[in-house]
Image (cartoon, rainbow, N blue to C red; front, side, top):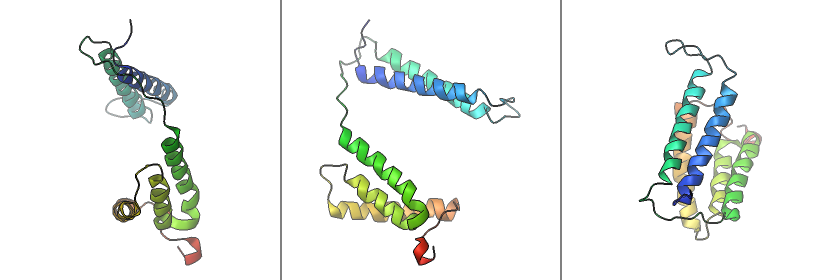
Length: 153
């Protein structure tokens, strides 16, 4: 039995594997009850929902009306660029502070797109920086330096 929609097949399989892996890891924590939830309750329930979602998507890949869709080959440049930008952000945050690290993250991530323009990248920097600063620094009060350490951040 071959799936008609390979994209849904692999997406469903991925959800099932990730849900099962996290569910088995969270199973080591105390579950508690629905009224007194332990540290493992939410991760196990969420993992179970992820597995169920994966099964629904996986089964849908075999239905008669599903379009014949194949999986495109992985384009490595954008994937490596974005993951590298996130790693660079994590390493730069303690020294450069939140503001400069976010700018580095956005600029390096924009290199993943073939049609990236400087004006669009600068607009993205401004909008995402203001939004992230409001959410993480002002509302959530996350404790990390806002400015570089050499500027007294």
